[in-house]
Length: 144
Image 1 (cartoon, one colour):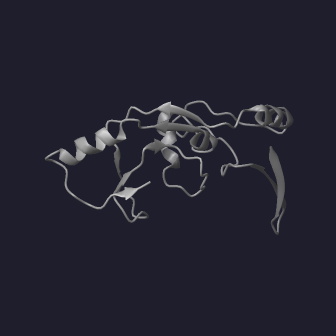
Image 2 (cartoon, one colour):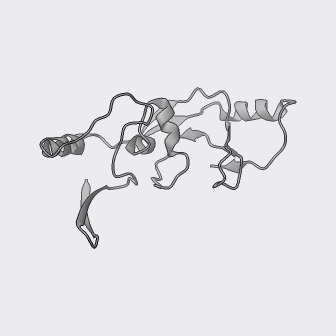
Image 3 (tube, one colour):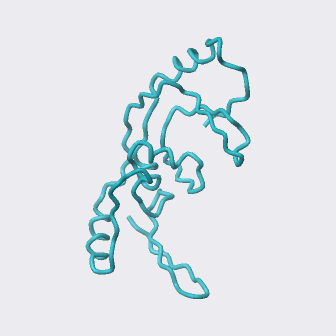
């Protein structure tokens, strides 16, 4: 189901199509992909018809990560370690720092991030292994 909404800009009116229950408005190609889909004015209506028929159900896939603790060095984020049992998220927060990680999987940081969730089923075992490692240095870990 789509909800139509118009936002008024001083220069022009911009129509944005919202997807019920999703935060992303589009599903752009990943930044590491060599092929990109671009919609032109000529085929815009046929693309919208195709896009409306696409299922928006969430799918889960097994994640084969070798670690459950993610490290980051971003100056915007107040922690450098986090634990998340998933890659992807249904919440749909458009500002999420984790969205670009789906690009490394050949997926979009848009709707793919919200509908294709990778589950780390062995997260507990991976955490124990990491914490028992003599190389691990105890620091604050954010939970996601």
